[in-house]
Image (cartoon, rainbow, N blue to C red):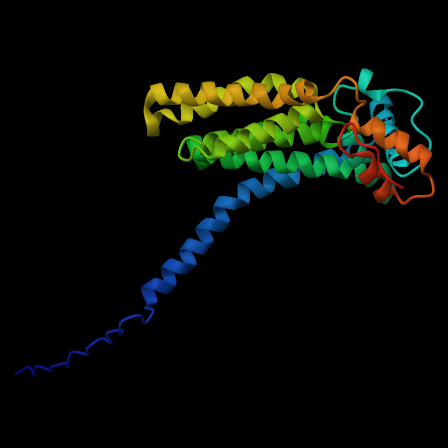
Length: 293
């Protein structure tokens, strides 16, 4: 005769409200691992881009030397030194008062490698921004392919190792593209798009050509939220703002008054005993006014 053994049921512990469970802990670990795995391909792409760009070895070519030297002469002129012996604005492909000043500051801190490192940081930032924009448009997998093709192509690697106007302009255009994608859900981002693309065009005049595709992207991304008619209106408004922002400084400049940077040079030469900041402040007084001693 067999005996029946009754095993008492063990009642599981029921967690109280707000108390974490074992399942929550497993989910948390899996979620953290998933986020890490999602970011790993982008990190690999950035490391590859930086490694290849830093492995390029060549001396400063004519453009780099010209930009850094012009920036140095502009800094000297701003703080009471001799004025440049040529007008760089007549032949530079970008504003001589933006990148040359930034590049010359980096060159003064760490030499040519520091100026090139600044360009590398700009291009790495452009890769990251392109990844974020593509995630919003097509998803994470497409974003990995897009940033890989962008970061490892020859022109991008060359710009990552060149102390020229190109890298900051590409970063600003990429940021403008990202805000254009985001403006589909929030029209406030249209202002950031205008500001960034205009500034990119100031760094490199040829960058203004890419403003038209960015305007089209902003209009297309707005179709899902506001319809194609209002999306077209947004595109027209964004294009009009771009034109106004680009042309306003030229229209507002008084032909009877020299540009601000030339007034700074003139007053700096006349007031070499003043500090650089004081010279700049007095030289940038309102047109028609005379700085007081």
